[in-house]
Amino acid sequence: MLLLLLSLLRELTAESPWGLPVVADGPASLAKVVMAELADLKLENKPWPGGTHSLHYHYLALSEPGPGLPQFLAVGYVDDQPFIHYDSRVDRAKPQAPWMAAVDTQYWETETQKQRAWAKVQQVETWTVMGYHNQSSGTHSTQRTFGCEIREDGRTSSFWQFGFDGQDHLSLDLETLSWVSAKPVAVQTKRWWETERCYAEYDKAYLEGLCLTSLHRYLELGSQSLTRKEPPKVQVTRHTAEDGDITLRCWARGFYPRDISLSWWLGEEELVQETEYVETRPGGDGTYQTWAAVRVPARMENGYICHVQHSSLNHTLTVAWEAPSHQWITSAKVISIIFTITFLLVAGVLIFIKQYSQGGEEPHNSQNPVSVEAAQLLC
Image (cartoon, rainbow, N blue to C red; front, side, top):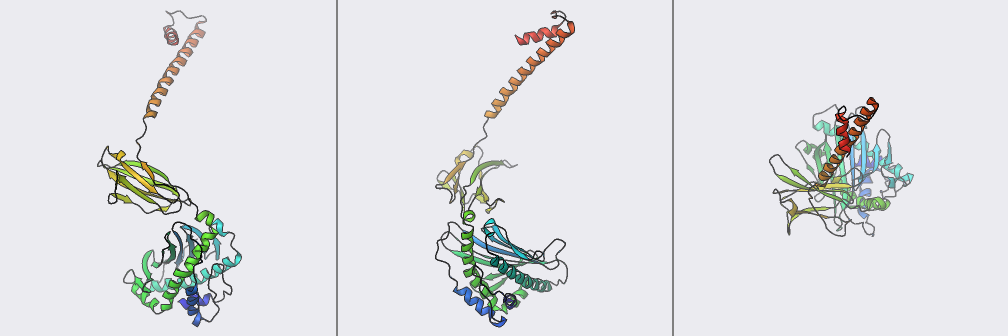
């Protein structure tokens, strides 16, 4: 399978600007050539931007795509932001981030050829795994996700996963270079891929070499966007359950980069075990959002403080729940009284004018009791 992919790439005669290895030999020796070049790649001696950064790719192949669906789709992400997109219907790799628009045409040509090759490889994998599931027709899918990450302290990590019909199928253990099956039927795929050990070696060399080098270069290209810092907007909300339990939830929205720390404190004690956390997720506008919640006794809300730490802040931000102000209620009452008085005054004047016009002269008290009342209102 690896040799099929490499043979499809053999026509690439120029190195891409991101260090894609040059492949020019015959298929029999391509694997060793590629792995040797990947193993020799070294990270450039340049400082990494602060925070955690990642480069991930997601591939999707469909056995029988329906109307309007591609047979193969590939999307690349830097820090959860899409930067490259390939759709087999268009058959061209295209930029998804403004900072990728300036990349030269050779890069896009190389990426297009590479994704075409992956489309053919994953199509073979899709039909093969379908056979393992006793499926010979219908729409089925395979998903390949892989990538690398570097943390602020310099530690790196990487992953490689393969799925079938949206379920985990296989993953690569980079320490032992063995394929880990997620379910019994995946053992057949595991045996198939174990016949080509160079496939696992290639993936490991890529993930621990070229992937990190590429990530560094993408961060340089998109430095204004990817290395920016936006402080979180923090708010504490209060929620009462049907059983009377009270929960305080500390929201952090609109921050970048992704790394953030939320914690609840009661006095000098951090409430680690009592706090419920959710995973930080994209906010849809290039920033992130998350929250942390804690249950509190009634009428004790003011003693609980949310602590927020983020690289955009030069100090720990502390936020407490604030009870709604009742000032607006007093203001509403004053406005209501003024409106009522004004209405009565206007009504009295209108009635007085109407009665006067009907009588042709100023009305007498005995004949126009209403106008007398209106006149009294005006006094």
